[in-house]
Length: 348
Image (cartoon, rainbow, N blue to C red):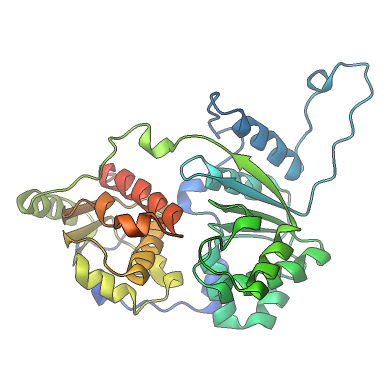
């Protein structure tokens, strides 16, 4: 992502527009995962499921199977590997490397046509192009990678499950990540029988792969977001703005502005920004606003843009009630990413 000229920008003044063609062109792994491979995935030996998941995904991607010695001896009859489903679903907590593994699948699979995007990006594409045109676009694709398959809207999820159901018979392979396994999606949020039937139908296409572990982002940093006082904040903004474009926004103003921009355009909202500044952060009292901010944080994290903030520490903006509800895992993932981004330095 190219950086804008040096200076201060206000995200609340930006109104990005994205065409369908631009949205399709953006369906590739985020820059931080450009070089992601199975070899560079760091397995935590305390959690055997990570190595097991890696080995299975190598096979799913068309890589070599385990050597004969690992299957019981050179002269024994090779054990036939069970046939895999057309999709793999990586289930695990935040920070265990699911997106790294998803990007590794994308890079490793010798596919002519393959796409990588977040759940929000795919549903936004359907909204921009229409369902039937989106089906035609992806028909015949070798691989569809869907990151962060989580439920904010039952209608969006039904659209995605039906899209998947149309693509699987044409030979498309699927790979998805989430913090919730597919047969439990919607748990604690929506209970309509039609919706649950859609979810269960989707689960039939996926082999769920559990990945246990601890949040790698917390291994190298303190457990809380960095908060600056007004003087420190002004100094940070001035230093960064002298070299590249930094954004500087009142937190409440930005949160209100996010409601006027579709989440699929948040990546354009921060395009060219080298550091995000948030003044006078306050806790959320509205869940819709909080979920939009989570989507914004996801895009900032994908772009690896450091965050500087004053006011309430960013790891404390979600209420106890929110953290105890159906979106708990989304909020905790956002907290993890915010902690990491406030500790990040700006590259020279």
